[in-house]
Image (cartoon, rainbow, N blue to C red; front, side, top):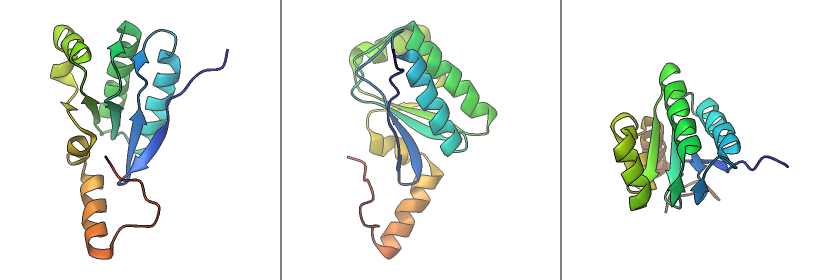
Length: 136
């Protein structure tokens, strides 16, 4: 069976992983691969958009903690976008919310990344590039 891997796209110069609605043992390997790709693209700094994620089991948590450690070892930071109360509760119970920064929106997470701040300042001076993706 082929590995399903979430998409990684650059938004304001920052790699963003679009996490699936459910992260569990069946798709955690592909999720981990996408996290590794995003970390490499962003030199350790990237965002995981979990705004559509309603469920994350221990395999998903393991992938996130692993990616967090990997990004820190590269001098970067992994930021999460989490909205679902069930996912936030699991993160609070396990302590993940104390080690990985999370934000309620993609825009708020991107505001924390210097590359995105630079890209926005450049766009303000020169105007947006044609067909460049924008955070919603």
